[in-house]
Image (cartoon, rainbow, N blue to C red):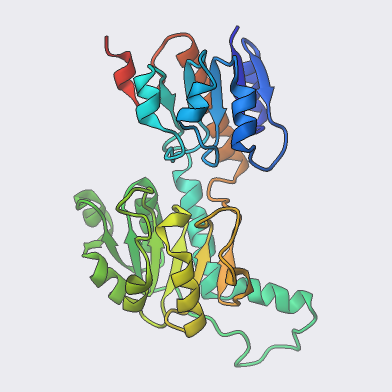
Length: 323
């Protein structure tokens, strides 16, 4: 029996798998534990199941000499020092693929919400400011037939594109490399980032967080966009310079934005929450019962495999298994 620290409560299906064979220490609060809390609880633990919000760095590794396996309940893993884990022979896994369609769904929910001003409309009705139908009341913009610019054409970006096909949208995309099958399937067109920003009516981000994608969208990029354009981000908050975005929204450089992630999550840049032309969502890209349950089972199975000395299905550093 191994001792495992879970930095947050996950769906019961994942917990049930783990507690059959192992002793669990679960953080039951809904907010992220502090780094010092993680360090305190990881002592004498062989397994760790963490979240994207948890910093797992050298200091944490130093506090856990018995640590043998880490899984993150997320696709992203930049919160974990993979190099340090590999140096210590600790395998790390994540939960890729399972949240593709759910995140694409939320991207579209945000796109429709900002295009048709649904949050403003909901507030208008709830505050008794709806005085009846009028030809100029709460005018939004169409989605059907417009140009969608997809930045990052991996699993999620392509899933968003497939949904756009049903709206007869003109699909353009920017990625590290061309996706010829994507182009053949949907008639998508590969363009440079400046061209995408200049042409698109809707710009949606689906890139991982790296040195190259940090502040990928800043003042220069926002200035390239149409004044009528709408920006959607379900990728990583740090991919957008939030202060530059606020200025662009305040000045009318772009028409609006819909964000599921934030630069210094859960904190917002000052003034963002006061803008009427932005929809704010609490990092809910994978937040469906079905998807979060699949993630819990995937993470639990990988962690159990690693603790048994087996290679997990979704290993991020397979080099630790090379003898």
